[in-house]
Image (cartoon, rainbow, N blue to C red; front, side, top):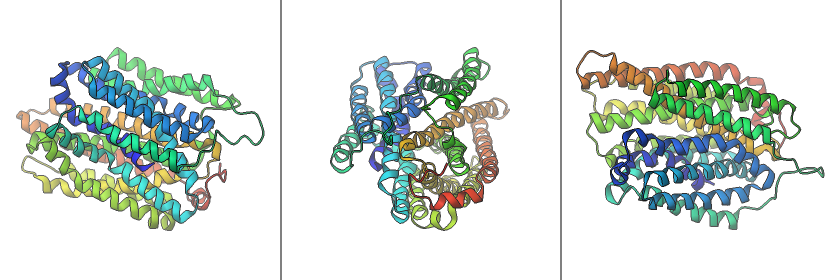
Length: 466
């Protein structure tokens, strides 16, 4: 499960490093370049809820193995692509199969480890791999691009997916479908599938469009208006349908709802910080792609260490609310320290911020994974797991779009030399990231009521704490 989650997360960043080489090799324009990233994000973000529910209905091991094999096939096609269109299609295929396997992995983990001590260790490992995946993607992408070819940033997924599929077939106990208690098998909520998928697609596409076309573009305005409307219709449908795609009690529970919100907040912060620090390392400090990947290692190591400690020791002792609120506060402090960099700043100037953001991510990844599925009935674990990934994906899309706009406006409004304007843009972006994260601290504190958390903290998986 950990290997699969690592692959899904690192694939969101490993291609970023390879984009310039892929663009030179396949000769596509700058305007088309963003679709290599967007195609994956659109398919993954919009289909996660459907993928999670398919696992609930038809068997999570089946969906997990199908997702892995499909992801491997799409990666092979992408690596061999001779043109832009085929590469974009392969990236969309990766997103589609990732939407099957990511919720299944988390749901299998939740049903396998029910003892509180084992659960803490398992989610600590899972959170560490998921949290460090983006940084590992940058490092691995830089090494493969520099030493081999950009195509190996696609082919390398076969080394993750195929062994994980074999191990899942051998080691994971199959349990067909969802528990029905002798009643007829629930049906797939097709109106919910259509409105939920299109709504999420519109939200992710809208923020991606804002980054490239601008916030005043007719396309951007149209899809960003359509997204919330479709999601509102989706909620109305879910209130009335017999077998909803997303049972609303899953998200209304204060602790789980706080976990989903915090996952989105972390997505905004992490995606934004890693994107602009990558620019800072390569454009301002003159690092090669490989060296830029190595520069993120303190972040990765911190996430690995903190995740392990959080799952095993901190979560049982302090509970989800304290860890999430404290982690977000440390993240805000780390981003505030990054907002102090200037033209004279070197790597040591950003190191404290990297470590603090790493502590934030280590605490939140483990805590949100463990509590986002806690107390959910067995038959709904897949869709509850999908909500965590959906929140992170939507949060990342929002973060990149908003912070990219903030950066562009800050640079355009600066009257100094281009280098000074760029540095001013970094400071403004990190200050905005710190402010958004600080606001999320307050929201998480209010949403996650301590009385409900005490019930959730000790509840075994499948206890139906609604």
